[in-house]
Image 1 (cartoon, helix red, strand yellow):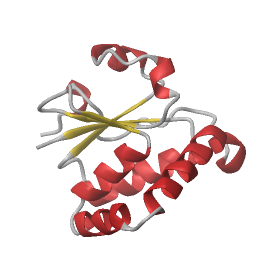
Image 2 (spheres, helix red, strand yellow):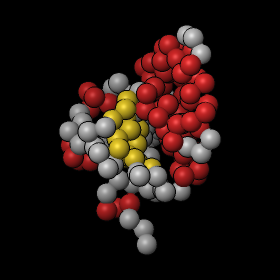
Image 3 (cartoon, rainbow, N blue to C red):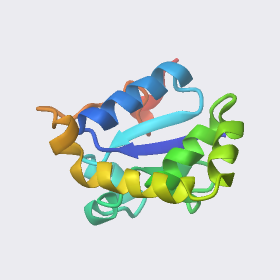
Image 4 (cartoon, rainbow, N blue to C red):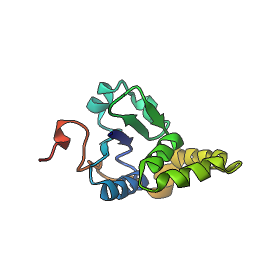
Length: 135
């Protein structure tokens, strides 16, 4: 099973988290594209306005299955080795998910102010599409 991660390639925090995920996964499960790649976004029917609501995770085998924002972050965590237990506990603790969702929204809306903006858009070494095929 594989997934597509759409992230803000100009956000220092977003890029750092993608790089951590790249190092953990090594392109086995996840492929990436920045929100600034309008051509790839168009393939999925995603607009720039859609991206304002946060990162997007797409099931590559069933592209209609999508998660966005904190839901996408949780699903990525759930898919990682040993991540499912952590995410289940997080979701089960009363009020914790609600607080986590609000924190995600605040960070999303203020990410450039808090973490800074990159001068160039980060392009993953594991991109979506033909550019991502390495053999």
